[in-house]
Image (cartoon, rainbow, N blue to C red; front, side, top):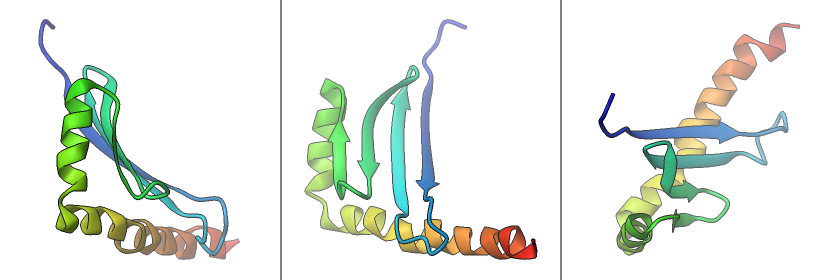
Length: 92
């Protein structure tokens, strides 16, 4: 009850059948507020709090970490969306 809430959630968003508009969003949340976010459209981390700005600066200066996040559109989002599309939409 009297504690802290920390979570990380990500999501993939698209509206086209060919996934050309796919966006990957990775949020770091503390007490229900987004502290820092990676958005594949922006291509880097954005901080929304003092800690988030500091974290974003450090993570944006790590080429390996940025490369990994940027790759998520292909390796995570599109990969899974193709499976869902085959299992659901193509059955109609």
